[in-house]
Length: 172
Image (cartoon, rainbow, N blue to C red):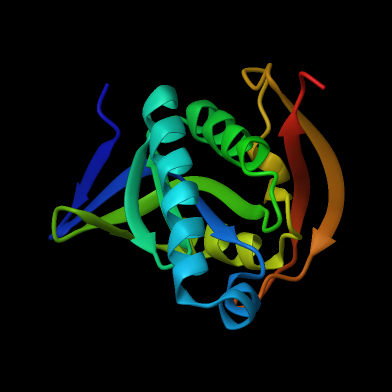
């Protein structure tokens, strides 16, 4: 069964997105300088690249000190992001937001839609070392991930508050 739906000239696909971001990167760069920033980004990007590959998800694009991750199923994306957060427990921690849903496949290699906006805004709201996701993403297939209710959150740009959970490794 295909997850691609065509409506006129628009192609919709079901995908899971995550945004990961280095918390405090601007202040770090200001304090430590460009050479230290480049070293840090090389290490973080190497870790993200390796863990995305291990979990079978794709880095859709690099965003300065962050990345947009995409996958077809939510479980591998969530497990990859949890591993990324766990692997980057240094001075500057990663933070992340995850969401799933229908998006528009735009110009063959990009995605646009509310799901992506939600994942990006949840990443912005996350504290260092934290992963936020909508409650409705939680399934029984997330056997390696613990979800703790975080309550309703007002998400910038969205009219309605979103019921949110914090995600972390269940192997603690």
